[in-house]
Image (cartoon, rainbow, N blue to C red; front, side):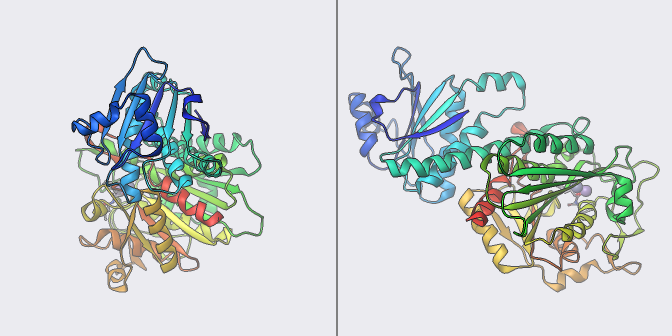
Length: 488
Ligand code: BES
Ligand code: MN
Ligand code: ZN
């Protein structure tokens, strides 16, 4: 899909669908467009047929006219980024259901920074035209180009930058969604490793990605026994995927992203109940979000250095599987009593986090579908955030707000950490029935003392259940916003 920005006279621009945001009044371009429709829009508003309430969408068809469709988007009352993003999402969804080829989006009718708004528009159009099913995807692919219209030349430049960023984020989200949605018999650890190589092979511009894949023998040499204890019970070979994006000078310390990729989490010997177990194919969404960020970075060419580390394995209960009560020595040297083999995410992450130190990171952020408890606390709306650095936590919260992909912080106080105590090892891998998200965070914090670190628990936000079951591509928007700010 092609995104462009323009400030040409509206009558000179060709499109077969016009998206017109309308706030409390018909102003500027909206008034001009209203006149070209002989006052029709004003009439619709006056009659109450269209109230312009934030997020309201009305599709009008004019099959005989060259401009075949008009999508009215209500923006009255939309003031926060979240509200504007929700409204844009609705209009993008309506657009994707038409068979339009060229869309013209009017960049007015909302009070927002042009670059940001253009980014939101491009991102939402990209994600609205994703479909898991190939047949539907072909249909949605009718949309070829989108022009973002602004009233003046200086805004065009900002809009172009925003469109490029937003389209990249959208592509990254779609990559993460596709990987998340693939069934676990296709999306295995080896499949993810191949994906990482494929992304690196698509290098075309200046900033490039190199990829290294460690196998179990190499992990064994590195003493990653916590990670390997999860892979013990499956026949699928585990991989540690390492991707290195160099967008800045070699001496700039990297941001390291560590993404949990359990391609299927049966629970292991601590087997999960059967109901809804299919959704544990989504337990690799943290890793998928890292691959999504890498995809977006290649597109945007952001001036940052980012290392992606993805520990990838299945969690299965065969005869060689780890048993409750087993003790392993992690790469850090700390010993872990595995009281529950279903608390496996932290076991693969702790070794990956120890390995992360090797890159002398500026910051390390891990992303994981780690605890069911985070859904109890925050629902499916917001992801959990835990961090050992106040400024980093604040930056991530504000990146979440800016991108509409929000996170909320939990404490890492030592009273919670004590719940991990074990009679047989330095720590247990579970902290009991209470404060599950926090004790999981405290566990990880024991492996991240040497650098600035944050943990995003995306168990609630990475996918939706029910009729619209599917991966969301979150938190690619949050992470990309954070990296955009980092690049300055
Ligand atoms: N992958 C799950 C977390 C999860 C559960 C995500 C439900 C989404 C929905 C994780 O590996 C897990 O099983 N966590 C356990 C931890 C417990 C054993 C301490 C959980 O949350 O129940
Ligand atoms: Mn589990
Ligand atoms: Zn899991």
